[in-house]
Amino acid sequence: MQYTRAQALPDLLRQRIVILDGAMGTMIQRLRLVEADYRGSRFANLSKDVKGNNELLSLTRPDVIADIHASYLAAGADLIETNTFGATSIAQADYDLGHLAGEMNLASARLARAACDRFSTPGHPRFVAGTLGPTPKTASISPDVNDPGARNIDFEGLRAAYFEQVQALVEGGSDLLLVETIFDTLNARAALFAIDEYFEQSGERLPLIISGTVTDASGRILSGQTVSAFWYSVRHARPLAVGLNCALGAALMRPYIQELARVAGDTFISCYPNAGLPNPMSETGFDETPSDTSRLLHEFAAEGLINIVGGCCGTTPEHISAIRDSVLPLPARGLHGPRFYREAA
Image (tube, rainbow, N blue to C red; front, side):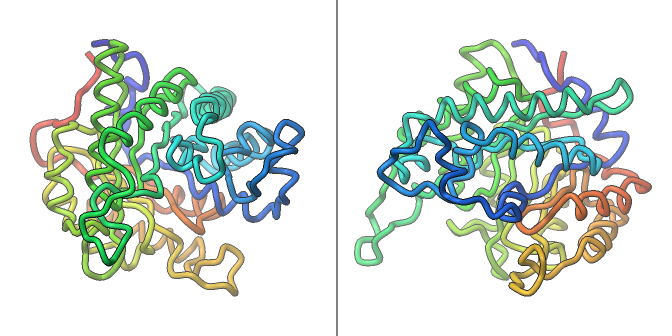
């Protein structure tokens, strides 16, 4: 098995806190794009509205996606996520565009690759995180309150969709893979199965980050697991890092990051919270300002909880710049056990 990308990441994570980018969707919303922007000339005659299908913009408005990547890299991000959160055939079926999923992932990865290559220097390499979102369907929860056994997706359907996505993301130049915003661990395990299947077939292995989502004060992901149970369900994938993102702002995420840092002592920890609670009066739609978020994440770093930090919904390049300035003077969290992830040979 060959480790052909991101071989510097484990050493970098031991040296300092690594900065992830912020919210793609938030930046797209700022632009107030209209239906015609999403369609472009290629999809002018689609029968369904596609406004809001952000992944389609990688094909119709690549300039928009490239500019957003550049804004986060200019703000100091080390890692940028591909515009592929909803780029599975399962998610794109809502727009009758499932057949374009592979093309979307390939184009998105190439856009992120070009942006990273433009900003990378020998002293400051930048990395592309090929992003796999959770899909709008869940293998663990019934969509019908009157039929607890009903399901609208199965493991094999998820595996096939994720395999197609992984193949295109790697071909497009991703340095690592990020399975994120996990609300159903069974969905995530299908993604992890597909990733390992692709690695075995291709002979190439990329680093992996796994990020779950605690949805409320219960301290559980939507399908019912605690943070500790979630980690023990995915640790077999031997990720470079495991963490939490989305759903909560940094203030509410603290106890769950503390729990994860305690149980996952043999791998690095990532954290990219929302910019607080929804607030329609604020510019980003959330209530934490860049200074609020950066102050809270500074506290996480001072407590020795994190190795990778960035932002999810509501965060902007201004947030990322403030977070970078706040946490970089502090040391990264050290591992408390044997290195669990697969390092480059």
